Image 1 (cartoon, rainbow, N blue to C red):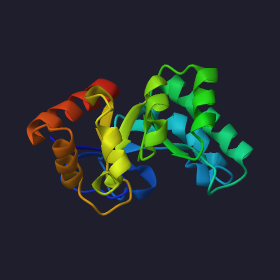
Image 2 (cartoon, one colour):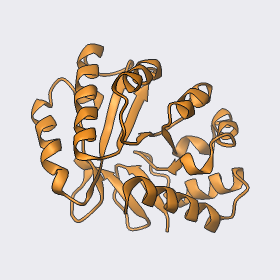
Image 3 (spheres, rainbow, N blue to C red):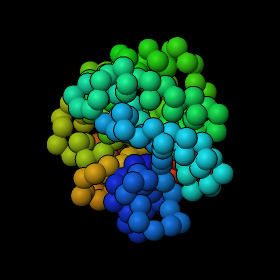
Length: 207
């Protein structure tokens, strides 16, 4: 079974967690949260997150996080992010993290809040911060960047398999292509990698 931990395009090729705003039909596993780019304008949605706690298809809060390149004022983003982390703790949902040039701030918030729910660094591509991300206990989700990013390919070898997820995000690459590339780089058979990611998925999301 292929597992796509974060996508904006629903398909029939795998078990997927689809970003809520891109879901057009149900049932489907999905994540729900306020993206940092929208943290200034989506005040209503933050109350809706907790209301979805009863929905068995809502598997994660996300993508949420911090972005120093795009979005409203950074303090607004931080407030919105912290509020959603607290909700994740209350309703027992993992968190899918969006992080652009803000890892130090996200790590500091994690140390401050000491969350019990799992955080997943989605679309991970910055090899230079890998050890710090692992030290903070995050799961790491690899996407289309693994196809051509040689530094990320080297970093992949240092990611323990029990901390690994795979995704397509908003790219049009298939999740099977990501699996094939990662299995080659990790020197695993495709079936071995499928089982590893499936086990991680069931452990984190209690499916």
